[in-house]
Image 1 (cartoon, helix red, strand yellow):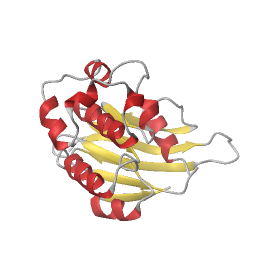
Image 2 (cartoon, helix red, strand yellow):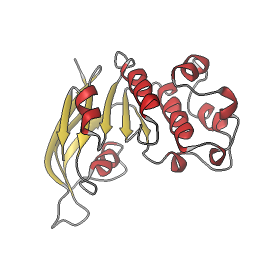
Image 3 (tube, helix red, strand yellow):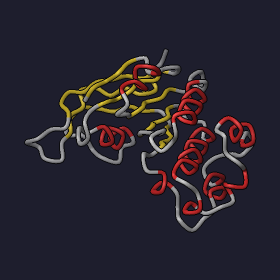
Amino acid sequence: MPHLLKVSKLSFGYDKEKLLFKDLSLTLVRGELKAIVGESGAGKSTLFELILKNLKPLSGTVSVASCAQVFQDPYSSFHPSYSLLNQIQDVAPLAELDKYLKLINLDYDLLLKLPHELSGGQLQRASILRAILMKPDILLLDEPTSALDNVIQLEVMKMLMNHLDSMAMLLITHDMELAQWCADEIITI
């Protein structure tokens, strides 16, 4: 099966004397969900920036298919002065919108609102909805369920895992129980 993500001997640090990681390698194929765990400041979100090619590694290579990202802070992932629906349809087709609204437990009327008019949990589910509708090869999930209560968190993770037949996922989490429950592999950095 071809790799959707191949990270080979990746080294990076904002200070060359203090590397966040050295010679990090990982691969991801369709159907896999891998979790990245580590303490705050260990470089988990920085790894996503390197995968998205927003940062340049000191050494090593990243080969990646199409990605969509769900950020930890949903308020920073939407423009404040446009409705959520406008922002979703700018990047994704809406053909399956109704299906996913039900799966993610979100009302259509909420998408007509501005980001600040929603709770953090509602906005995070809208962010996940947008990412899924984009139909990426890889979904990069940075603490995607941290703003959700336990029941909704479980529903959302089950829904995401039901999409592993069409994509791969890389999950950043501090929740080791969640990682152990859903991940094929746990990578500690």
